[in-house]
Every structure is written in structure tokens, then in C-alpha cells.
Picture (tube, rainbow, N blue to C red):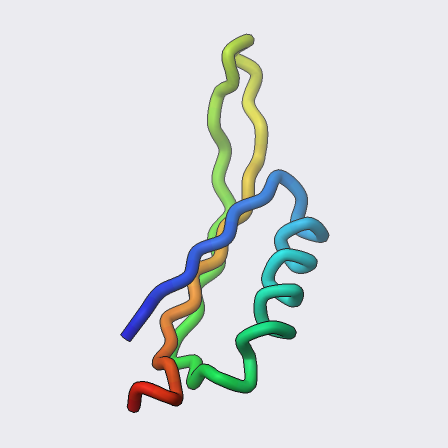
Length: 64
């Protein structure tokens, strides 16, 4: 099993990254599990910013 992780500051950017990766790899993988999180972190100026992340656990079909 493999895992691919994505992170972005905007949900729309995260969706674009995931969709681009799936367009390239989607036919060659078997997705087992996904997890999406939202979090916040302090930047250099101590201002809180939100981020989004998704992880996709999958099997490479060619290797199964």
C-alpha cells in the first residue's frame, strides 16, 4: 500500500491538486482509504492561517 498526501491553503487549490493527480494516476490505482483534515498554524507574524490536507491510501494495480 502507498500513500499520497496533498496540502493547500485553500480548499479549491487542494481539490485542483488532487484532481490533477487523479487524472494522471486514477486508472492505475485502487484507492483504499482517504482522509481530509483542516488545521491552523501560526505564521512568522504569529497570525493564524488555515490549511487543508488530504491523504489517499492506495494500491498500484500493476503491482497487485
